[in-house]
Amino acid sequence: MKKEADGPQALEDLIRNHGIPVTLKNDNSQMQSSKVWTDICRKFCIKQCFTEPHHPHQNQAERYVGEIKRIVTHVLDRSGAPDEFWALCANYVTYVYNRMAHPMLENTTPYEKCHGYTPDISAILHFSFYDPIYFLDSDGSFPATRERSGRFVSFAENVGDALTYRVYDDSTKRVIARSVVRNVEPPNNRLDVSETPEISRRTPILIGHEELFPDKLLVEIDPLAHTGYPQELEDSKPFIEEHLDDENDRGAEVLEATKDDVDDASRWKIKAILEHREVNPRKTEFLVQFNDDEKSWILLSIIIRSEPLLFSDYALTAHGKRANVFRQKRRQFITQLKQMSQPSTKVFKYGVRVPKNVMEANELDRMEGNTL
Image 1 (cartoon, rainbow, N blue to C red):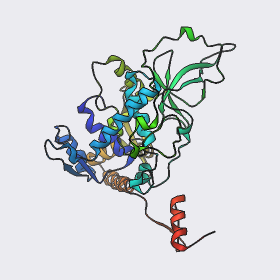
Image 2 (tube, rainbow, N blue to C red):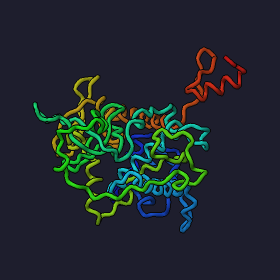
Image 3 (tube, rainbow, N blue to C red):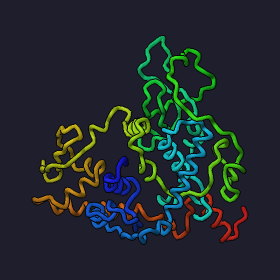
């Protein structure tokens, strides 16, 4: 979010992507105690807690926000990335943090604690922040090269497959999502690097782990080798865009570019549900309005799958003989979100407990005395 007023929308995005939290611990800002924020918490039955005025340390997340900022500074120093890339770097750091084992979580990852399954870390192992790369230029034509130069900046979580990345295009100065990406070795000698505009960047600072991190934060096994991230991990993703400097035009440009989809699909995002009609007893359509103000009729199943929050709001005010059906589906949706927000329980099959991951399998072997 680029300004404080975007807070309620960010909370709805959190619910949409990760499920309904049981409790929210807020400070005493006007936004987090506003009617709009409280209405969202009331709608999804989220308990609200507040810190005492002038006691920010009572919110445990504040320490991890500071930790994220500290590590972002180190990564920028070591990669040589410009200061304007701080938001992209914070996105990168929190993504890696959420997929690293944490001793306080019994050597599991925060992602697994939240969603109940072990995350795939394949995407993390290929590039480090601000690595120079080549990516596929789909508009290139024979015999011109079909590669363009850029920088790896983050992971495209909601675009393409698991190995789709956010890439900073050296030519257009925009952040785009691409899956066909490779290292700069071997180099593409047909790319005229002299025509690539220079980016003002800080000089990399080459220092060792012992100088970069306190001993208690050293990582014993570092999957990124030359980056070296501490193991302490907490989901601080809302920090990424929270304090964007409006006077920093370059930072605003880069941050805005991250919100652009590959094919500018944002204009097809549904903005509002206007009305519904019953085509037949088993088929209902909704008249929706997109961001570009175009309107279209869409099936109920598509609405529930793509825009559950908008459907939930519409169900509260709907009238007609289908209104009760909508409210019932809304209750089912809220129940599913609450289940998503809870860690998975123990799994049994035919009366025998089944492990969900390697760590749990080793624990069961230890409990049963298995030595095979």
